[in-house]
Structures are given as C-alpha cells and as structure tokens.
Image 1 (cartoon, rainbow, N blue to C red):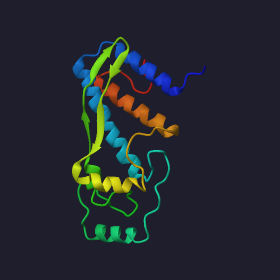
Image 2 (tube, one colour):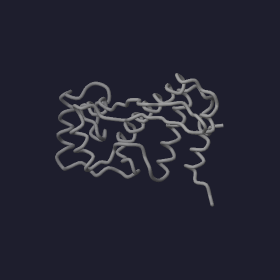
Image 3 (cartoon, helix red, strand yellow):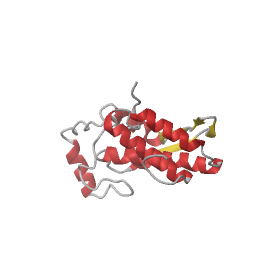
Image 4 (cartoon, helix red, strand yellow):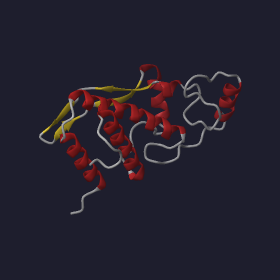
Length: 173
C-alpha cells in the first residue's frame, strides 16, 4: 500500500512535535499558522482563485463600472483596498481586514498525539457579506484538493515551524 504525500507530511509533523518543544513555543507555532492561513486566503482570493483552485466567476456586467467609479472618487482607502477593477474580492478592503483567527485549546504532543485548535473567521460586521460572496466565489478556507492543497499545507507547516522555533522549512526533519 502506497503512502500518500499527506500521510508522510503528517508523520513528519508528528515526529518533529515529539521532539521537546515547550508550551509557549508550541503555542507560538499555532498562532503563526493562524496568521499564515489568513495570508493564504487573502492572496488566493486577490488573484481570483477559489479554495479548490478554480478561477472565480466573472463579475456582473455593471460591477466593474461601479468599482471603477468608487476607485476614481477615492472611496477605497486603507489596507487591502482595491486600486484597480481586477483586484478580486476587494473594493474598500474591509472584508480582507475583517479576516481573523483565534487559538483554542492547544496541547503539546504526548505519546505521538497532538492537538492544535485554531479557527479562521470573519468578524461579525463582514460575515453576511462574506456568506453572500461565498455563493459565487468559494474563497474561504484552506485548500483540500489538488496541488494547491499541498502548497497551502506546506506553507502552514513552515509557519508553524518558524513560530515554534524549529529549524528549517519545507520538509520536517
């Protein structure tokens, strides 16, 4: 029976975690994964790619004109605000600013088992908008299919390792 890439990745991850890491370093690693998750979602959505690796549906006929007028009037300002019509999922930038994460119960590995609990979320003020957008543009989450999945998982593991102070990136040794 062949071992999948994901199974190898998980085994290597557990192996690395079984090495002594103190609780605060472990927690810092989990926080780093939360931050990286948000970054991955923002970058992917800004490129117009959904969580499964497919291009977003095209904008409605009138939306590019509306967005261009808002940009020209300077209504869009602040971090993540659109500067051109093709800045996917961004107009004012508020939705991207409202992406957040929280760390729940997290415990250090014991006997090869570990638990990391972090949630990526959208602040209450933008939740309704995000739910509406998700009907046409499935942007939220970390990829679970195809090559995009492996890239995003690797980025999360690298973020954990860096945050936890485990040397190296990519393959966990």
